[in-house]
Length: 318
Image (tube, rainbow, N blue to C red; front, side, top):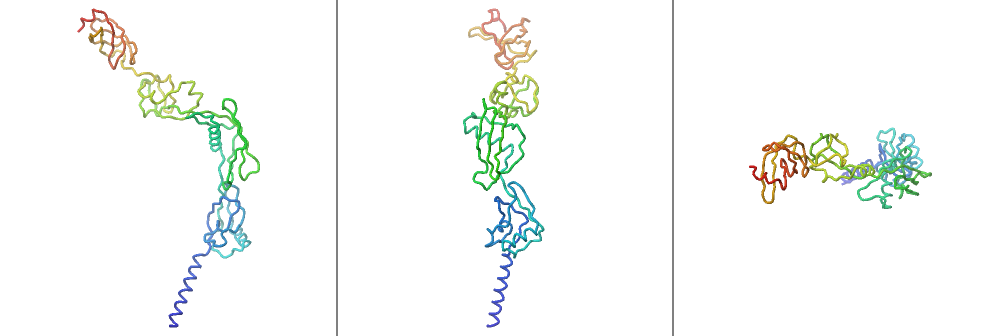
């Protein structure tokens, strides 16, 4: 019985020692914090009751620092925390999170301000050009309001702006000014096309473009472009303007066409040769192969030209 009890005590002792070893705090190789102070719990796994104990100040928002093991030992001793496993590390990487305030962030902020003031129409966005280069700066992400707009002014015709921002963790406000380009969705070619080629849906994509430029050159929608013919060759990525497209030719020069003579309920046909290219509903001159005389008609379909109320002598044409 004594031997059995001794074995139980030894087993319990071994289990407690194993549990104690597993629970020993272990230094982390890398730490990410969002507060001004790095705690024991930030630096060590299994920190236990010491987890909330401060060790040292964290780096500035959005920056990274390497803390040597000697500095960690000194900070831990001051905090009354000495029993831990260094995991063979010589230093720990400490990074402090932050809200990145750069040109992209300012562009988004300006869009939000203009939308809140109802200065952007549906489908419009603002593209900002700052008057001075902005070095990336980080605001304290732990703050309830990392970036606060103190002032925001828009110039005449919504073309310029000036702003003053308060950044958490920084004593001085950030002052900015610049120009605003209003952007709208406009059609662009996805691939290079030659003159006269017919546009398909896959040839067109909508991208943001300057509202002033789009308005001056004419606003086009995809449904107005599909099936149209290019008036000139264009490279892929080029914007599509009103002057770049036209109705496709349904008749080509020197093409043999069918000439329809209409007089009242009577319709007669004869073969002819087109003297020029023409699109739907456009006038075209053709050479009547029966009389060898030029006649002007209207394109009414692919390879079809119609002459309404033609002369009576035409009625005898077979």
